[in-house]
Length: 197
Image (cartoon, rainbow, N blue to C red; front, side, top):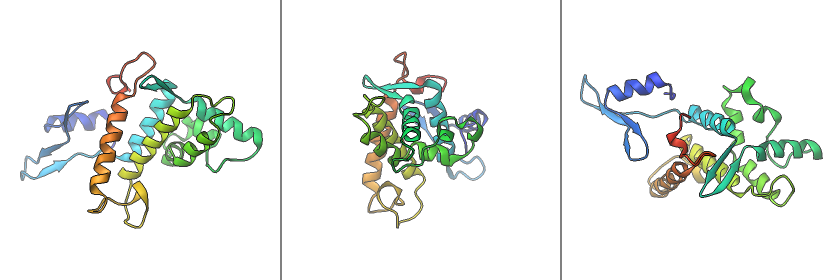
């Protein structure tokens, strides 16, 4: 399901808790048959919400290092200036996404390893100084989405479906990403999970 407040309120009525960082209960027992029901928020909806939050705040921070939406805008501008793309799909539609906000592909392509690699390539170019934490942020969101959106054993890395061979590594990666995301702050130094977004 998506993260609609009424959906989350219903889950709370059944005994779930989404109070970060330590009071998380994402399952409940069915009142009709006692079976355990797990609540899973849709990865595609959550990815779009992350994109919207990043756009809304424009600047985030992790351990004092800035994460800036501006670098994505600068990448679009740079690619328009040189009249070619640096092995990514980023366009103005990804930056000015309001008319396309329901399209998951724009959020997925924004938080992609190809965008991170393009920014890495330009990190010493004017307009991209200090981009390292933005690259780290994009890579973390990309890896999280790949894990949550995985569906086949024939893919590689985090896109490979979870199985006995990669279960422990995937769990470790999810814990690392959780710790990272819980440490992200807004420009006022407030942990992002404590804000209304």
